[in-house]
Length: 274
Length: 288
Image 1 (cartoon, each protein chain N blue to C red):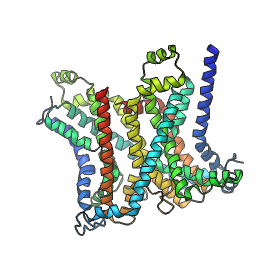
Image 2 (image 1 turned 90 degrees about the vertical axis):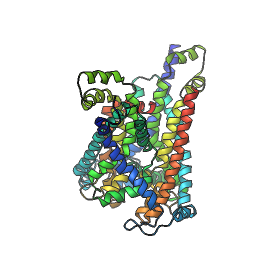
Image 3 (image 1 turned 30 degrees about the vertical axis):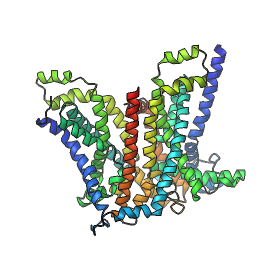
Image 4 (image 1 turned 90 degrees about the horizontal axis):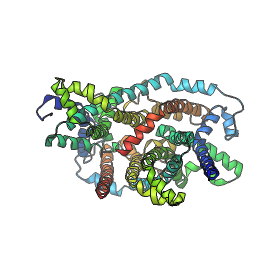
């Protein structure tokens, strides 16, 4: 009986290993070919590299202007995340602590945003922001706040139902202001939801191409996906450089994910069940 | 304890309301108006009434992009959910450290943006497939991104690879919430692995399907980045999805008013899908 169970487990593990290899094979091909010369990629795509062509990487890093490009992506992602978290949790707190008809009307108004796909507003949005000179990094952050607030407020509102009002009422008796209660009591209690929002939205903001291509499409403001797009246009027959660039932008994200895996998995699972 | 008149209430809500007005509602209203004109991006020209909307329904490339998008969505949704659920069942077998490792590997593609995924698969389809064709002599591996049929499957493969990890995590969290006693009871009754899956686990995770179906449907429908980086709509717009059709009409042809009319129809389709999804979820919840 015990042997049978052990055998079954080994079988399952082997199936898992097989599928993992299939799943990871595209990454493997990108990595091995990024170390080949241009002609080697052409002659033998599937084999291992003959030598390690590190010059692919130095050229790619240089052409990507990696330091500045990554900095733009980091700044835009962090600022957007910060404001989405603050703006939405404040709104959800206000709405959950006022049971009037007006309050539920406003909640409904915010929830409408959940239904609107980006393409529905893309054209006028770009036109309006262009008119007020906001097609820049700050403007992009404002757009992300507007686009992400509905979902985040919705999630915070759900979480706030589980936080008893008696908690903030006790603080009021002690003389704390609404904002002090929000900052010192409510926001820390909302941390699990905040993790979910940060995980989902950082993947969105970091990886987005369409909106940045319409708003920060200028030298000096490029984010990583934008720069990659131009890089491919410029070097489209030079796979040795293109592949090195791909590895450069993928590896840090995978390392970050493996390090924060517990939070990422929990964040996404919590988000799905709510 | 906050009232409509209290200053704190409005201060808490103000930033969210302002951001939503500026980014969502004002553009939506202005867009609604522009869709009735021949706006070209600079000057709002003539008011046309519903002329743009009538034109949209006669626009063959737009209709084709909608059909392509619908086909793509249906095929992807089925494949993603079948593969993701199988992976979730695999990962939730008690395999210790192996489970974590498998979960990490399957989720990895989801970390990467559509543009970069598109370029990864461009390499696979253009270079790797061609060299497989050379080695094996099977011509079917050539020119994958140059024909409408294989271009379609190229996009599907990319999207399945990207989304499965995410959908798998959702199935895992539902599978893990099944009480252990129920599984044990089935085991004591002598249920086989297949019986356990179809008779016990599947019925218990039914609520997961509304979440995953809607998530895959809406992301398939709105897909743009992957489409741009992998096929750019080619050959001859045959793999152009609706989002790309709207983008090109607006920013390549500069027919902004007309493009906005397309965008409003697209919006309406998404809203209808969402409302159906919400009402189905509500009904299921009240049944339970």
